[in-house]
Image 1 (spheres, rainbow, N blue to C red):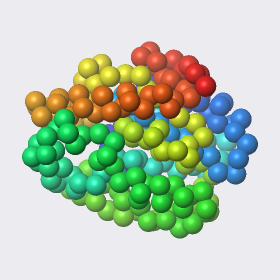
Image 2: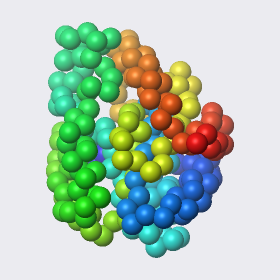
Image 3: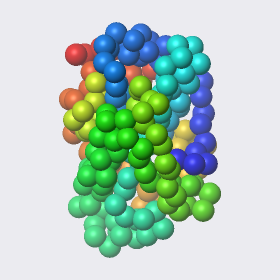
Length: 213
């Protein structure tokens, strides 16, 4: 997302280095990496470190795609819509436009020029990003539910809950931390845990890296 605040530390860089060692073993022309975890867990920071190192250290063209850009409901009205329809009923995987997201993933796999939504956090509005995927070898998709994508080659799950990332959320200041926000985070917590079993790699609470598949 445009205007996002990244809080990159040594733990993100170290985890990225370990993950890239796994990526380099994947013998495919096009590679998809997905990173999931709860709000404030460091998904954007980790994807940035992985993408930057692939490009700068290994000369491998990489692109980051944020699945948070694919919500069906416009950010201006999303929270109101959630409240009106019941946070416990609507917050979760079904909020994402999987058809559009999978179309852009297919564009990557088939080296097409693709038009993708992109949230600009300054006006909190939706722009459009155009990318020529013929130039990209590695697509890194991050977001709460990113590992739900079926065509991923490497699924990474950051095992930190929103209770443990309150400081990071406050520092980034993307959304108000009121009762509504905490109710949303609780529902997201349940939804994120429901897809944890799709993980190949777990980033532990101390940001050490564990392979499970």
